[in-house]
Length: 585
Image 1 (cartoon, one colour):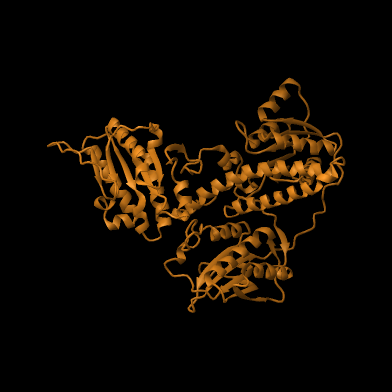
Image 2: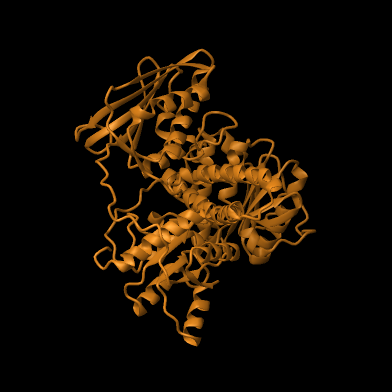
């Protein structure tokens, strides 16, 4: 193979390049470039492929070979290929051998088809590529991974895309926009740092293990996407509501506006689905008695599984109340019902029970002790094998071809936000049993200090938002309510105006995640001047992304995006009321 590439590839891209190809010839340019760069750098290079055979380098007596070519199975034992740790240890030894032979390092081209012969190849791919990522970050190792798309089904694509920073496909190189780095440096996805100046209690170390690491990385990715999507939805929500309330809006266009409202609601639903498994979607908890929603539950499940399954329902006569977000919990129930329908096939049986339950300290693998309401789903399917059962909550793990493997992780995320719990077991009759536990709710006291319906006169609001459309539309909503609004596209612009022409602020309304200075830093600096300044934080993230328990500083409110004009107005009124009442923190 000629080692002079016909198409230049930046050296940075060769650090960890993923080649997606259909025909062998499509790999020629990136492999040539990779080997040429290795030769220039004085590194040993290896090409490990069952089909790519390079001419053997002429051996010179007493001088180690720089280039090595062979099949993957020639360099790794079956035990190493089937277990990630031994394989990584073998690669580390090869790196040490290359340095001992006088080379500057090691660069490897590897055809990834060997992954298809491992147990649970999607999971093995994630484990292997994650460890390769770690090795590349802390050493000088360079790796070029080749994936023949005709051999890898779509279920592999999330892991392939999430774990490679650079892609070669169809004759060109590109930065991979889907890549999730091990250490996330972007401020827009590292929002927990915004609140580190607040005193907070120590929290337990995060869960460890490969599935938990994948869940955390995808959670960050989904949180960032939902943040951007919620910003755009906010523009649509505010703009369409203002049009809807405009007296001079043409009657002939109102049907089109209704269609836009319907599309916006569907986009809201998609945003909820995107973020639900990662617990980054706002929850609207309500005190609900499940037995009072029984008819809704029954109809929802029947719509999902019939005519494939017969369904039987049982419910305790008196069921305790729970704190529930109906939209999100319904999504969890529908996912369980879908899984049962797929497992049973036509003619199967699904039994659904809603009942009171008590968890004790003696229970194994159960929720903390306390009173709960159980939602129990038992299907007549073939059950789950003992080898598969430990992996069912892992993101992207699936035994069904063509499925994405995110159904149960989404359910886990929803249950976490409800402080609930999920258990899955297989009985002796090979039936699968899924139990969702929700803690019972205490009576919710009525709020006797609800804000007045009237706007507060002569109040000045400092509005800071880096999204121009949200800034403009929010200002219009508040001015319509009688407030004086000073709008700024950044904290820097606000401080510059205060220096040039000082003015009084009755309330700060600010986005949280912004370039340069974030909303919380702005809040702290303004609190130095006005210690009791009421503040409303707006964000596409939820409050508990910024603090471990979701608790905000005193005299502050949190407004999740996207929001409607009435939600903005009510939140501002509530915050101003807190500022007027020195006893209300």
